[in-house]
Each structure stands twice: as structure tokens, then as C-alpha cells.
Image (cartoon, rainbow, N blue to C red):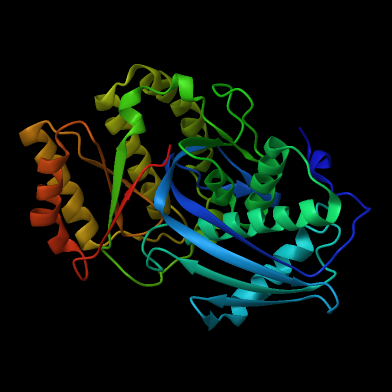
Length: 352
């Protein structure tokens, strides 16, 4: 499939409309870090979609006014975000030919704290893309649910790469991989449910808020630094190769290997940051203390508590509901919360 498949209909009728949508965030297990032009990923990635951490967005379209965008986050006007959305809308006019023919008032709220290590850009652009597809169906005519969802994923990617994964529940793949039928660099696809062992379908993700605030280096800058990273090409190849064992792990329910691979991917992400030029470190002291305590806990108990990291200091604690979750939760609350800034933790589960 090519970008031509997503070009919009030239015949449309616009009217004043208000639409609302919600979209969850996601956390990658095999990481995407590095991209090419037009938000094409340098390697495929696979993520879990969260359940409670989402963005709720309403979009008012005024057809009789000149093109402009006004945005409000939790009731507060955000001028810089409006400028970003205006640029995004101009970039996707080929796919939605009506998009510059009105004024937008966008109101959005997250169900999770800002700068918490939960990807608000993913849920935010996912919600915006879903709203745009609702408008497109009204103005240009309906398409099938599958086609609409695929185009929403395509449009979300052009706003924030990982946003394309948030349009689907469960395990989601973005980026062309020979191991996943139908996978594409242009949009995300749901990983086949029949190929996922039941043990991976009932998982917790508790996010420890080690650092609440703006990161020292943005993800956009971090992606850009991969262009000159001497280890980048080997990293991209490793991510592609990791889909081979991941496919077998997901099918057989091999929790030990799942833990090993997921933690390796998280640490590799941050290793790439440390080997960039200039180098940067987003982990904090608390991040490392939590990781070491998790490893000690697992050695002592054999219980499946493990971690992944986003491009920041906060730690995603992953553990299944398999009968041992009460002991794991007690350990988190008594031993790990002390390493957060304000005893901060966001408790979520994977959405299937």
C-alpha cells in the first residue's frame, strides 16, 4: 500500500460540526528510535495499548470562518500547540482536501499527568486523527470501519510517529516486518490475537513518576541524533531481528524470555542516547535504583516483575495478573515508591 491510497476525495460538502473522540497511550516493547523523512520509522516496533491513560478531545469546526486553530489543554489556551496543529493540518491537506477551509477550536484533556513518561503525543494525535476522520466521513462520505481506522492511523503517524499504534487495542506493530503479515511503515496493525498466549493478555503497567517535568532533550531531538549515531544502523537491524524471538515468545508464553527481551530493548534505547553526539542521559538516580531493586526482587522471589522505559526517567513496571500480583504490588508500594518525586505512580492495565 502507498500514500496514494489515502488521498482524500475532491468532492465534499463542509458544514459546522463538533465531534469528540478518546484515544489511549501506548508503551513500546521493541522500541522505535530513529526515523526518516515523512515520519517513516527506521525500524519496526511493537507496543501495548494502555486502558486508563488516554486523551479526550473535542473538535469544533466552523465552516464559515478562515482557517485557524485554537487549542485548549485542560481549559487553558495553548498557543504553541495551536501553531503545531496548524502546521500539521497544512501537511495533511492532500489526504483531507477540506481541512484548511474552516476554523478549529480543539479542547483536550489527559487522564494522566503531563510529563509523566506516558506518551501524550501518541494519545493526543491519535484522538485528533480520529476526530478528523469523523469530520471526513460527514463531509466526504463514509468508508468501511477498517479503512477509516487505517487512515486514522496513517494520519496520526504524520503528527507523532508512535501515535499510529494507539488506534488499536492490545499488541500493535508499526513498521514493515517480515514476521508480521500486513505490517507497514505507513500505519500500524494489530498483532494477530490468535498468536498471543493468554498470559500476555492480562497485564499491569504501573508508571513510577521518578521525574515530573520537561525532559532535558526532547524525543524529536533524540530521534534526530540517531542520524549521526555510529551505532544506529546496527541498532535498527537488531530491532528487526528481535521480532523473530518476540514472535515465538508471544506464541509460547515464555515469560522469562519476554522479560529479558523487553528489558534489553529499554536499556538499548537509553544506550543509544548515551552514544549520541552530543550524548545525553534521561535516566535519573531514582531510575537506576528502581531497576536494581527490581532485579534483586526477581532474583529473590522468582516473580515476574520487570520494567520498560520510554524516552525519559520514569519507569513502567510490568507484571501479569497470574496470582502473584498482590505480593508484587506490596513490594512496589513499600520499596519502589520512595524513589519517586512525590510518591507518584500511575496505575494502568493493557487494553485488549
